Image 1 (spheres, rainbow, N blue to C red):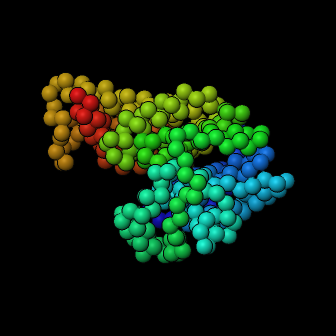
Image 2: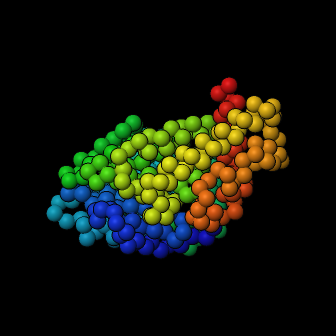
Image 3: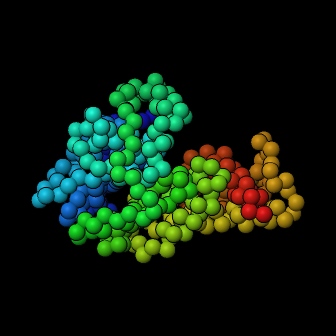
Length: 303
């Protein structure tokens, strides 16, 4: 995937006017929450350039004593590689960066360092200026920001990653799900993250949220996407349980066609709508197969 330094402000399509949606190409949506006391950036996109554009969108609201706060929903590159604008030696607008206590070590991992080096080599015009900057205010469990007119409840929603947070604003019944739910489905980073991810989906679906916005889904996806994600994993689980009961190998080989093995083709696991069928083939094939393998792994571990 090629990346862009452009960040677009998305036209409001019915959500509360205090929520601004910023879009970085086809990659990711990030959010600005304007409350009485704070202007809150929810994620910092992919580099200093996109973070600077996000800050530019926020600047008109940094009046009447409002302070800037930054939230990292998790430590994936498309959510936090603009952090250096707000902390460290290169900060142009110093502000607290709130994130999971599990996030900082991820910036030190050899895998993360190697990934940054690779991205800088492949797309220097986008990533050459990125400097790893972890969150500066570390939280565990639920964390609440009292913005005066709006409350931001930071809710741990692990699964996609172990450091993942979503944000619920009860006064306006709005949920910023981040990567806890996606179209077509969130991906657990490890098989052990799958049950956590499904528990997080259930947790978010139980909230009284009328508006739900995602980092990787159309702004029109709405609350229904949470339910569709839950139904997708439920469908896979049902087929995997049935296949295991019939005696299939619970640990199929790497070259096994697990979709056929458990009789769970993509079309039978998702809603029969154009939105769900008009996605990249990867999610219907290799991605779908990886989800099936994760469910099989979980069921074997559970047994």
